Amino acid sequence: LTESGETLLAYARRLLELNDEAASALRGAALEGRVRLGMQEDFGETLLPALLGRFARAHPKVRIEVRTARNQELLRGVSNGELDLALAWDTGERTAHLEHLGAVPQCWIGAVEGQAWAGERPLPLVVLEAPCLLRSTATAALDRAGIAWRVAFTSAGLSGIWAAVAAGLGVGLRTPLGLPSGVVVLDAESLGLPTLQPLGLCMHRAESEPEPGV
Image (cartoon, rainbow, N blue to C red; front, side, top):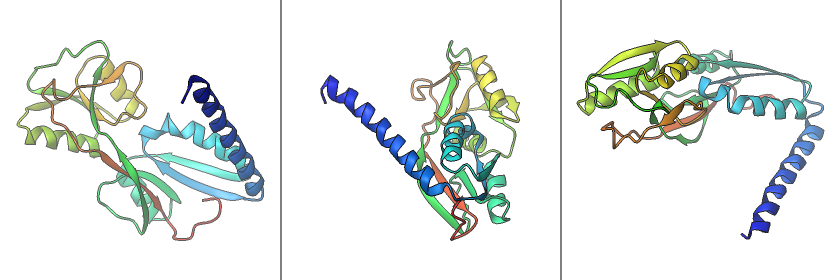
């Protein structure tokens, strides 16, 4: 595209998005009820605000309840009927109705201001409290690579992870989603860290034919 074409394309996308939102609002005006949505904390700061805003404008009579939790709790919520939908990592566990959405890279993360721990052994890890899928993945990958490690910092939530990594307390394993400004994706090869496969992402539904709002 030319420079003018790129500019026009950006406007065209915004026009189409506004058109779709207007059409959804007209179709969804009569929708009522409740949607109970569960998702990983990783999506709470990035995906959730825009998602809830667009949905609320298109379907103002539908009440949305959101729970951010770990994978096990999300899958249990769907299976028990406590959640209508759950966006969760693909751990191989199955619910009655699920859709594979794709995959997200797994990456080692460190502080923007440099990695004081580089070359340190055992490797200091910044992790969420167990049970945690990425914590288990990190330790298993380091064990396979023959890299000694220690837990340098444990947190109950992602905000603690971001703060500890940004402060240089150690290395973490996350996805690139929602990384704050003080944290960067590391070059695993140059630091001698194992390379990991992408992490699958699934949408789980409690019902095969959910309510229209869901």
